Image (cartoon, rainbow over all chains, first blue to last red; front, side, top):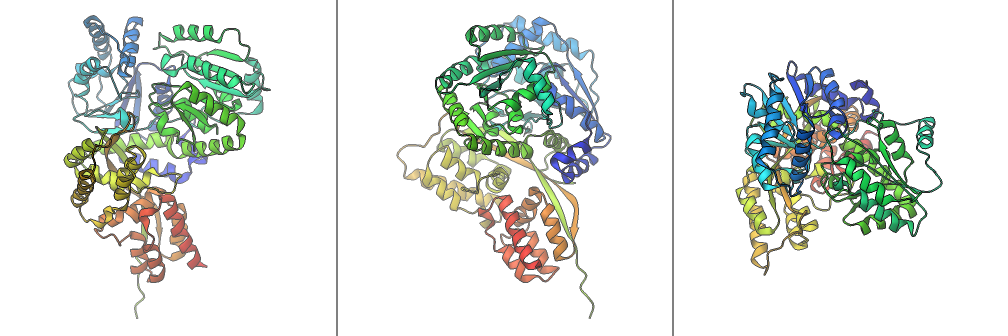
Amino acid sequence: MNSLNDYVDVVGKKYIEQLKTLALTLQKKKVVMVNSTKDGGGVAEILHRLVPLLNELGIETEWKTISGDKEFFNITKNIHNALQGQRICFTKQMLDYYLDVNKKNSENFEFNEDFVFIHDPQPLALIKYFNKNKSKWIWRCHIDLSKPDLKLWKFLKQYLLQYDASIFSIAKFSRVLPHPQYLVAPSIDPLSDKNRELSKEEIDKVVSSFQINLDKPIILQVSRFDRFKGPLGVIEAYRMVKKEINCQLILAGGEASDDPEGKIVFEEVLQEAGDDPDIKVLLLKPNSNIEINALQRISDVVIQNSSKEGFGLVVTEAMWKGKPVVGGAAGGITIQIINHQTGFLIYSTEGAAFRIRYLLNRKHVSEKMGKLAKEYVLNNFLITRHLRDYLSIMIALENENKYIIQI
Amino acid sequence: MKEKVVKPFEFFNCITLISPTGQKASNLKEFLNIIEESESKVIFHHLYQSPFKHEFKAIEYPNDFAQWAATSLEDMALAEKFANFDPYDFNHISEAKIAVIEIVEEHMWDLVTIPWVRPGFEFYFSSSTTIIFKLNMHADNLTGFYNCMKKAPLGSIYYHFYESRKRNKNKAKDDFSTWLREELDENEIADEINEIDFYFYSLIEAKERILSILKQKIK
């Protein structure tokens, strides 16, 4: 496990000193992070790094997960989709079950910590079962909340109103709420297996294990098999590009334990890919970090064809590897891709095909964009900046109603 | 004669935490209504803290309102009016807010229809919390000041070269030139730094410009 000082080579000594200065004001504070899974998905990945680093800074931080059965995670997947705008009808029975599982989980927790960070909607209702004492409860929303299903939103909002603050990834996701809201972009860990530099041997091993032919340019999308990520549209765009350039497509994704819909979408993708030898659909095992890292590094163009997106950390990862990304103009992708500078924003399958063709043809521009993309991630989307934001939020909550805080 | 004791320049850094209000405007009328009801901290964020948002590009529009009018509302005349308006001309944010309202009202007076944006291009209102802390970097002579400046993060440039003018309630009073003049008697350098029209510089550009002035003088 990397320590804070290992990040000096990436972000500089001064930056790490700043984190220590901020953390000094929060010594003896206790923090708990709560979400629904320790495996799979961007939230778990962030917490795997953030929690040890907060501890290293002297802020005692625990990570707890709620448990639930298949039925609960089916409901919360629907809640997730409905919050992202899908029309879903929730029966009273479904919502009662969601509350029941939250209630059962609440019996396993005490939450006497100074700061309780609840991640995403799955454990949102936990607050209902606690008498609020000195703890500050903060809801950290990682998903696109720009147009939630109204009925569901009203149902969840009654619990959200009990919180002391909320955190959203971009301004577009925030709602009018009576408590402070903060913007915190998610982040990647530059030293993790998913993002660190790889040796030639490590890359070769991945290439041979997936039997990838490096003779043709590679278009890559790494994402869960999820309709909002538009995997079928990627195949369509690839087919448009293929008419002009002899390229190949890799669609790679893992399964998250809280996403029961993934298997169905995976089957649809396999069917659409048919017997095209230049399309590889890879169902990755959990923790295939080096594999994803290598796939991103050997790719010529990375695409993220999302129509809805929380933030799109996979875009950040590819940018960190100096790849220009062609990304759907959704959610957090719009703040990562500065159009024509760090990549291309797309609004249609045709747009995706056009931009991929452009980047495959204009190698020099592609390299220049990739370099700028990496610099942008360095300044804005690394775990060290994320850590700084969490420290700042805790400092802000300790200094309520102050807009300029000198420490 | 007693030698002057130099009070060292203490470099501070600042971090801004952005707090969205959850309000958005999809046309100019909504924009005006929300501005009229907005607290000073919202106006402050959008008018004065824009330099934090320009990373690569040179500043085309120096505040969030001008940027939105140009790129989302596509009302170039309004963008120019917002851009030419200098919030540092006002000592109080409430005065700057009134000036913004007047710009929009006068602009709308001559329009036949209300300009609107496509979905996804709305103006999202935010305020911010600024956390200020010492950087453990100080200088008591010109060379030391130059060396610290090289290492200063952009938050430090913002705090001493932009925010200081609001803090001092004086557009002409940035921390750098004030210290160079008052403590080192380096009036010429202070004048040159003070004359930088900071409103048109990104933080990186402002830092580079200050460094180049200092470097020239140190030679």
